[in-house]
Length: 536
Image 1 (cartoon, rainbow, N blue to C red):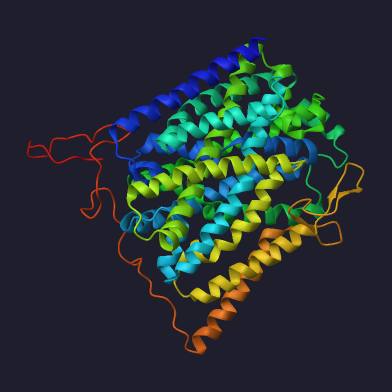
Image 2: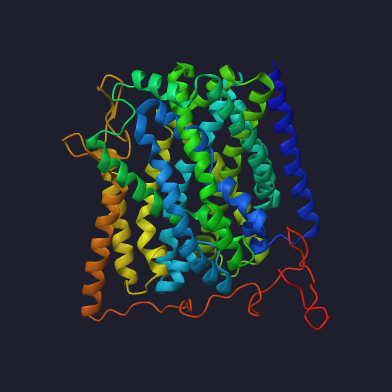
C-alpha cells in the first residue's frame, strides 16, 4: 500500500497547489478571456517550456504509445519521427501565427482563418471542427488516467469523475495558469520516473535482452514489415500536420510573451522526443517481461509494469506523474475548445456585444461541458488502443489545415472554396473511418465500424485516412478556387495585415502587462549609466 499512499499524498498536494494558484490569480487579476484563456500572453521562457511539454507531451506519450508498441510492435514508433518533424515546423509556423494573433487579439485558429479570408462562416466552421477533433483527444487523456486509477485499485467511473471534477474547478477559476504551474511539477515527477525506468531496464539485462525477448513474443517481430512502411510514413506526416491545427497547440504558444520565447522553446522541443522514444521502448520491455494488462486493457500496460518492477514508493511517484500528465493536457484542451466556441460562435452569432468578462464566463462554463463530454465519450467507446482516438481526431482536424496552416503562407484560396473543401474532406474522412472494421487478435472482425484510422489497400498495406481526406480536401479547394476566380466571385478581404513585420516584446504596438508570471521585467543599466526601461 506504500505506492497508493505516496500517490494519494502527491495528488492531493498537486491539486491543492492548483487551487492555491486559482485563488491567488482571482484576487489579483480581472477575469477577461485574454487573462483566463491565454494567461494574459505573459509567460516567459521557463513557464512556456513546461506548459508546452505538459500540453503536447501528454498521457498519449506515456500511456498510449507504449501500449501500441506492446500490442502492435514497431508501428507504435511513428510518434517519434512525428515529434521530431514537429519541432522545425513549430519554429517556422508558430512565430507567424503568434505575430498575427498578438497584433489582432486572436485566441483561436478560427479567428485567424475568418480574418485572413474574410469569412465569419469559415471561422465558425473551423471552430466547430476543432472542438469535435479535440473531444477524442481529451478522451485519450482520461482513458490513460482511468488506467492508472484502475491499477492502484480505484476502478469504476467515480474516481475518474472525481479527478476530472477537481481539475475542472482549478481551471474554471484560474484558466491556463493552473495547468502551467502544475506542468512544472509534472516534469519533475516524470524525470524521476524515466530515471527509474532506465535503471530498471539495466537491472533486468539491458536493452539487448529486452529486444531479444520481446521479438520472440511478437509474431511479426520487432522490425516494421515492408508492407507496413506506407502506413507508418502517412501516420508520421498526417500527425505532424495535424498537431498545428489543434486548438490546444495554439493556446500554449499564444501564452508566450514574445517571438523570442517561441523560438527558444521550439528549438528545445526535441529534448522531449528523447522521453517519448524511451516510453515507446518501455512497451517492448513490458512485453519482454510478460507484463499482463488488467482485463486485457492495453492502456494499463505501463501502470502494471510500474506496479511490478518499481520500488513501491517510486511507483507512487510514477502514478502521480502519469495522472498529472493526463489531467494537464485535458485542462488545456478544454480551455482551447472553449475559446473556439466563445470567439468564433458565441460572440459573432449569439452576443456580438459581449464584454470581455462575459466572454470569460462563457468560456469557463464551456470548458466544463467539454471535459464532461469527453468523460461521456469514453464511457461509450471501447478503445483497444487509445492512441486510435487521437488519430481519429487527427483525421477531423487535418481538414482545417488549408485554412489555418496553409493560410499562414498564402491568402490565394477562396473563402467559399475552403468551406466546400473542408466539408468534403470531413465527409470523405468520416465515411472511410465508418467503414474500417476492428479486428480481434485472431484476425476476425470484432466490430464492423470505426475500428481504427488506417485504411487497408488490400495487399497488406495501409494508409492513414487523414491524409487521404486532406488530399481530397486540397484538390476540391484548389479546383473551386480557380472556378470561383474565373467566374468573378469576389473573395473576402484579408484584414490580418499578414505581410507586415513580426512585432516582438519591445514593439510599442504590443501591450505589456505590469505583472508577469515569470517575474517583473528587469531594469538593466544602459551604456551611459542611466536606467533603461523595462526589458522582458
